[in-house]
Image 1 (cartoon, rainbow, N blue to C red):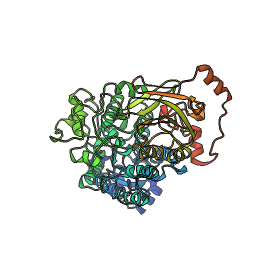
Image 2 (image 1 turned 45 degrees about the horizontal axis):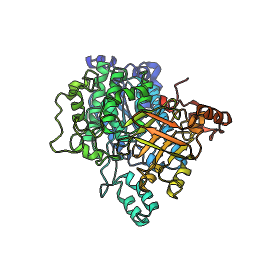
Image 3 (image 1 turned 90 degrees about the vertical axis):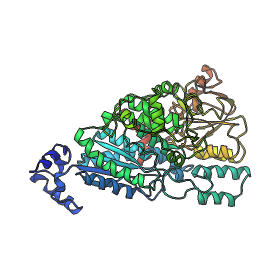
Image 4 (image 1 turned 180 degrees about the vertical axis):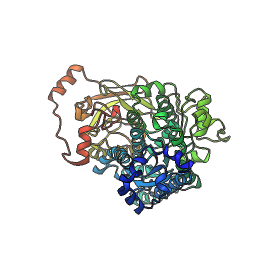
Length: 564
């Protein structure tokens, strides 16, 4: 046996159980059929989890990126093995019953990666994700397995003609209902808004989570800010395949990287970028998977000291591709580190600390207008506002940049489910000054915690963005903006106060005091609760039924293994 083979034996903790010894001859026979040689059996095996699918532009190119990661692993002396997991498209399913599978897919993806890697005995893992749920799903799977791993982001889409994107299309529907544009104009926007592969182009959930994962230290520097179709993205995948071998040699695992301090860095970068409310849900879930204690209180604590600096869609002007053009998030992180806002001593997948990674990073070019300076922030503290009060005793998450105002009060307009609310907004039932309440859309009640992108886009399209508020026990797309509050807990299906609200009840939402209240006495709420009856579950079989039975509260990340 050569010295190199001997070194490899130390790196083959899991694959050796599958391919070493006379008793594993059947396994080797099957692997020979998929291309293994005698030499390959002596190498560490790196699983390449591809989220490729033709169901969405976000992931339609990832098969080619997975091949680049495989090449990188092979060049570094490993044996790369590509396998697939699923993805779904929020952008396609939003506003339909099918959207109930969206958040559920995060758990399916995590389960499938855990199952394949655990079963096949891969020693390390590269996962390539490109859409909202498959990114945290990949990270949850990595955390559970705790084997040397790197995540690669599939990259952002280019802007459509006229600086359009998917949110432009959603909002065009509302503009049509208002009478501002006709059906032909809607179709014209529809035809140009999505020009090719890549994730939705603003600081929506995909780009938010890519940035969060890079800030966490689980992606190579720069991975979150690359165009989907670019040499940089192909190189990112190749280098990730190579780098997993280095992590194997140094025995660096997700538990060494995904620490409490790393999650704090991630939260702060998400806030500075104006990221999606979904980051709250997903980061708490990812932390749970690696046994790190992270809660809504951490978002409150860190939000008080972290300004909003990025003028990115949906509330801002620019798209992710324009942030890519000026250097991505690395210069922002360098600024934050130099200002004492980030922990520089945390380990990353480079094998170096965050401070070491950022040491040679150059600042943004003069004159750029995407990232504001610390002394002139868009908002001095977080746009992700955690609310409590008698409507959300265990918390709710608002996305308030300050452009919508900081306080709203008005009578409730109550809807059971998203569809009724969308109809009410589009047909003029919803009036200025009202608080739209959409309930029974939580993790259990939906089930699946649908995003309210169609209603919020209709609100904006109808020109009501500054005239109404919207609260829900569901959640929001990263593309949603306006005075919106989601993740209201306890959810309606569990008898939370949101289930007890009636039309005309006065609701107050205050981002400065961090309270959301309905102007009812405790006695009145108790009397209504006594009459409340839990509805029958909407699904009795299949994935949605299993999810509803096992899922935790949104304030706990909506995970399915919290109470096992």
